[in-house]
Length: 309
Image (tube, rainbow, N blue to C red; front, side, top):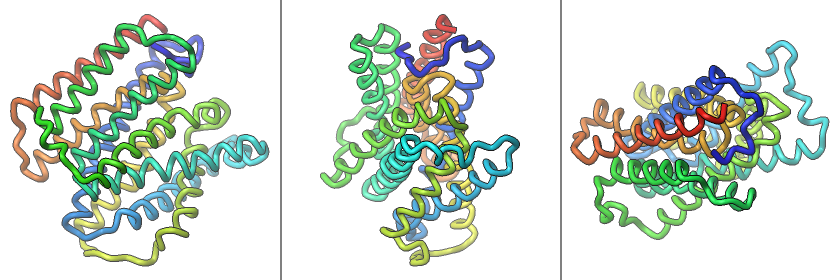
């Protein structure tokens, strides 16, 4: 794999941990996207309000955990001006951007379409590293990209291009979401080599939430607040934010940005599974075919990376 971010001497046991954490993050994100659509469509929640509180609460939880740990590096990052500046960039153009663009894209279209557009992101990541290292991707990377994109496309569109007919505004925000995902994946790699994922993620969310509060007033709530709202909101904050982002950034330090982002192609699969159980959506032949392609992607990535360990 093109893995400038892959640490030397990595063990197979550690690689399994990296793959597992990336896959878990994808599942949590997939379910989180479905919960977000539920809140937007059925509870009248504003995407900006949801992003603001998601960042603030998740950031507070992660920072509390980080500060309480033994030998915590929570405040070391501020002692180096270059690192502090990179953290601020990550908070605004990475953490805030990747969440708001995705949620706003869901609000303008739906979770399926938004996911398809956002998963142009892995292509951008691989292209960046190919240009950066001045080399073409190897065969297994080409195959992984083809299967990942084809599987995602089939899973959320059933093979019909007509289902991607959306407004220009939705298309713009969806593509912007893809670039935000790529930036979020690549930009914090150097910080993650020096500081823990909990520190980088926690500060990123907290700073991002505070900054976004000047745009979206967290106290200005509109919508229906009941048990369903509470449950979906709690899941988004805990599993779709704290755990998912921490898992993903940790996996990036173990298996590399490209592999981690490609493994997250199972996100649409988790979203579809929840839709079947929760929203009674039928799961037809195209859904299963898309699932198969995504599983093949995981197999190729695992096998293709195995020889590197």
